[in-house]
Image (cartoon, rainbow, N blue to C red; front, side):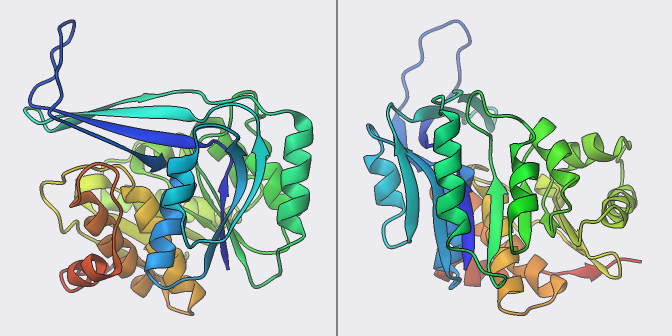
Length: 305
């Protein structure tokens, strides 16, 4: 089972404009509002790809019907807390093909809530499971929390975070990490200007205890390595409708393949196809099985030295 950890309940609102007028009045022609968050995205895509996936974390007592709807059919183990979820607003400027994001901090949870969450999660896990720690931490949460939680797990963990949560989490030696190029540069202190630079940085992290490092490189493609072998896959979508959920979909594809015993090249192929399927859809819509299979036929990989 893949357990996606969902600690910061989120509603995603995507606003489509022909042109964003800074300091002026903007009238969108389309607004999409859906349950969101990186853990939700990952669990939905992994489930659609045939993996057993569940979600564990927090849910607010108000305003979470869209989150529950998005997770329909997926096992959820939530600790319900008072309040409202945060709203993340994404403004898509068609003229510039840019997305501007406004991400709220979210609710504040008491230490007792984290204790209840951990007890709930740890009671369900076995060595055969995979826990994914992804997304921003709630307001007031210690940035070291992901790393502390990884140390308590009886199973492998994947980490997809940023900033201090990523830096501290790496020290707990997660089995899989999926930084983007900027996050990888921050982690290693390297100036990454080529695929060779990125691969060298990944190998540096693997020497520190990470088993698999996958890097999402946006329109440049993606890379994966376990230290012994490495593969690169170019992007198969030139003009994405929206990049929201792309990284989550990639990690969902990678873990889905690894959980069924596939190798890292197969994992990269499925992850790249799932990301492509997601970014070809409007708003925060996520990859379907059928669309992922279509893009899988277009994915190519190259082994790196």
